Length: 374
Image 1 (cartoon, rainbow, N blue to C red):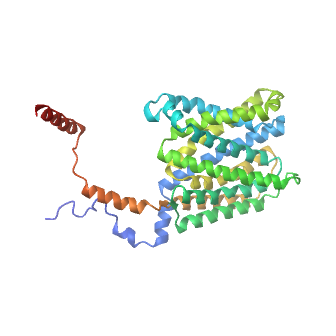
Image 2 (tube, helix red, strand yellow):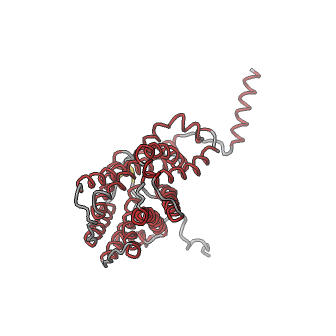
Image 3 (cartoon, helix red, strand yellow):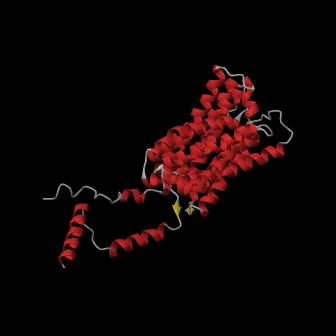
């Protein structure tokens, strides 16, 4: 009589029929898996947060003549510090606030300067160049991120990643082609374009540092230190550049709510982004954020009278498809194969260890007693 479990597939062994499927069918299953869908949805949540910051900033400028990007960022960094730095202060040891400040303060100060100036450059660029130029040139962050990941994180890409990036950039090109607005800015556009490229490169540096800290250390540590030093750097810049502009603001409930909306959106953006980077990569997150411009254009159609184009839908679909395809296959590091071989060798040569800590303690006690007896 045959065993009832003989016909069941052994655990850890893939279904033989899965290997016989064509490559395109296996890729299709990966793209539409729950893991990829979760990353795509969280990426769109990040785009909505970023869209919220753009819309609130635009409303402050158009309706209330308030142009204080440093002030807005300072409130966001202060909110991050208020939540996550206090959280980190409750920890002790090497993961505590005092230890990190004593040993790593200069590293996080550098990270804060890069992140604050990236935000400032990109917002400032809107005063000199057009939205179309910003949408096109801020894509420079993607190849810069891939190069930095190659050299710093030792990331290696497969053919699907390059194709996915190309599809996303084609979607951005479609968006730029559909957006015919010039915003009436023709002077100093070269300087504005330079600010966009500089801001994109600084964002790439900040994102690669974030990926390293989040995956090697802690999400809370990154957010706490970014909030603490970001508030310090942006506060110093605020006093130097925008003290007069802040003093001249005609404060009312609407202005206060727009400031609060911007701060909460940026706070949610940074908080969710660490989780997405932890489960994907900084390059993947940057690809997903390309849809934020489309959301801004959709909302701007009702708030600012922007014209709608059917190419916006095509651009959105292309970016989502490219984003999902990029996350369908994980990147790998150049040293992963060597580490796997070393780990296998160590496991074979390592002596057997005790199963529980109590057995280790008992062996140590026996050794101490035997030495004292001698």
